[in-house]
Image (cartoon, rainbow, N blue to C red; front, side, top):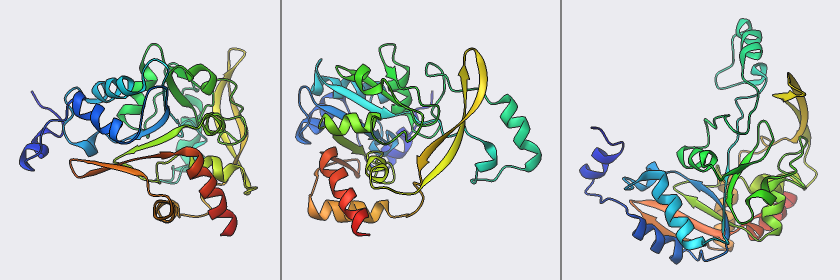
Length: 269
């Protein structure tokens, strides 16, 4: 039997990570009962976790309790017009084949191929709630899950009225495990409320039982490639609580503080 990452951990003199250790880590980061957390978690960065995603989930829920909430991005950017794909570009004779055969967004089944194992674990839990945006959905479990994921509009999926807006107003915390601001989705809320130029995107949905390509507005998230610069500036100004597991940094900080700082950062830029 083969266990992913175990050989690497053994060769590096690492140790298995248990639920008890994770509970202590999350508690030391300042998480507590009733907190709302938007989590970006790279399981691999922590080495070998006994029980994998389920153990991380159990540890978080142990700390947050029944009144807490876990939110993860469950984006499906692949459910988009293939003519806009860049990494790699799609051959022209593929475009119509893909458009015709690409399954439309289904909140119950659409797999989030770019968000990682933990995000998909949360998404697939029977009690999980998922928002309806065909490209930029969020999944959540816990006390505020239904509220956070309901009523998402097609246009400006990271802006006013979005799950990120609700998380901001609920004073959520951001948890980065082995990830950085390249994965910090909350920054997109800041980008969405500063009057940045908008673009059009297209995704496949089902309306009245029929498949349809729908176009929506979003802010241009690719104007600057500066998320890591923003992270350095924010952390230098407002240092987050930090833990280290298997050489991987874990950060926890206020989403509101982060967004407010990002708004000012971009306005000055």
